[in-house]
Length: 321
Image 1 (spheres, rainbow, N blue to C red):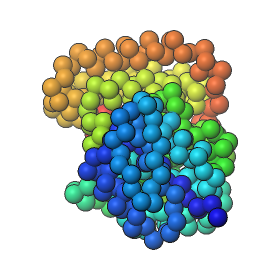
Image 2 (image 1 turned 90 degrees about the horizontal axis):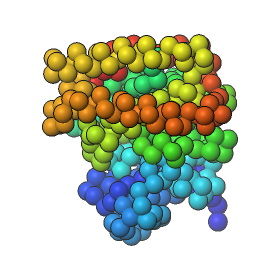
Image 3 (image 1 turned 180 degrees about the horizontal axis):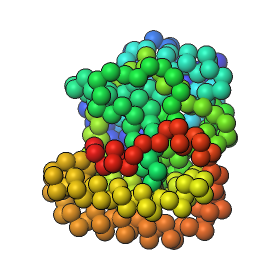
C-alpha cells in the first residue's frame, strides 16, 4: 500500500462542534487519500471514532506542537500538514499547498491564507516578527490578501512542511507547549536554508482562539515565556542584546493601549482579568527564562540578521491587536 502524500495533524482537547466541522472540511479535500490524524489531548477519550480518520489518544494534554509531532512521526508521508481544530479548510487547501511546494524546491514550508470566520478579514498570510521576538500574523484583519510569494514562516494554525524539514529540525519543540512553537520551528528551518512560500489559494477559515481563548491568562503567560525562549535560541547577537529595550517599548504600547481601551492588553482586561496579572506574567516568564538559560544557550542556532530585517515590524504593531 502506498504511503499517503500528506499527513494532516489535528491536535484537539475534545470532540467539540468546531472539530467536527474541521474534519468535515478535510473529508472534502480534492487531494485524495490524505492521512488525517486527530490527536486527542483531553486525557478523557473525548474524540469519537470516525471512518477514515486515525486517532492518537494521550492520557494528558501534551501541548499543540508535541501532538502534531506524534501524528507526523507515525507516518512517512513526504508532506506534513497541521491545522487547528477550530479551522475549516477549503476543498483545495491541501492540493494548493502541495503544488506550491513541488513548484518551489527551496521552500520547505507553506503558509495558508487564513481568514477570520464570518468576517471576510484575514487572520494570517504567513507571519512576520518584531525586534523583541514577538511574532505577528501578516496582514491580520486586512481585506485583500497579499500576492503569492516568500514570507518568513507559516502560522501553525494551517501550515505544511516537507518531511525533510521535520526530520532535520525534529519538528515543533514540545517544551513550548502552546504558542510561538510555529515561530521557533520556522526560524530553525530558515537557519537550515529552507524557505517559506505563501499560498493564497490554500484558503482556511479560522474561529480564532476558540479553544484556548483570545485573551486568557494561560495565553498571556505562555506567549511571553515562549517569546523569550525563541529569541535566546534563534536571534543573532546583533539583535539579541537589543531585545530588552524593544520589549520595554512594547510593554509601554500595551499600557497605553489599555488606557485607551484598545489592543491586546485591553482585551485581557476586558475579559475580567486584573491588569496587574499581566505584569506578574512578565516577571514569571523572565524567571522561567533564567531557569532554562544555560540549556537555551547550548541550543543556540541563530538565523541571519538580514533575514529578520527583511521581515521585521515595529513592536507597536504587535501591541495593536
